[in-house]
Length: 266
Image (cartoon, rainbow, N blue to C red; front, side, top):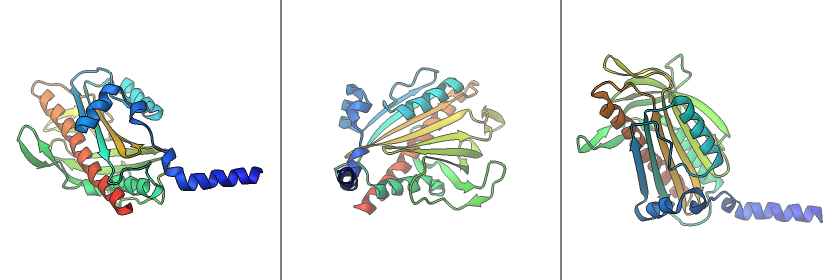
């Protein structure tokens, strides 16, 4: 009898396992945020203060990670973005192949090279990352190929050299977390970020997050960028725009990777 029970549990898992990972939008967000997302697909909040994060999905590991970083950093720039990505085929939760394809897509940091964003101040598209490559460690700049995984590890860190139009050539640490229902990425600056002769953010004073949560026919994408920045006269707008542009560029890049992962498996 015990063996029969385990057999049917295993069979159920194989046939319907992709359903188990899917979360409910209504359980993750307030009714108001769910309504806005279903209507427009996006909600943004950008502030130059140390206010609390207000749109974090109710997902334990994500909430703990974000709140601990916010308390430690005490940011004076704080931005949140919610996006709803509709999967090409509405159905149950992601399959193992879809999740692995998406994970490998967002670990491929070299594909950020040449990524464009829409500049509100210039009212045109601009290149954000002139260069992006995985390197072998924070003390060197030796380029490495993008890693590829057979299945997403629970936690993994890599270092990257990235050059953008605002803060120039810097080293960043990317930490990836994965569980049954989510992939979470934390980006931290390893080198001081400068604008001309001015150090705008000391090392580890920029932290950006992308959280991807499987919600059946949708992926809920939550992005938060927080920074402790030098706010000299004339710098507030520049820093805010750069942090916002970084988040916008990463969201655009994520959408490309999600399209590839889900269309290839369909």
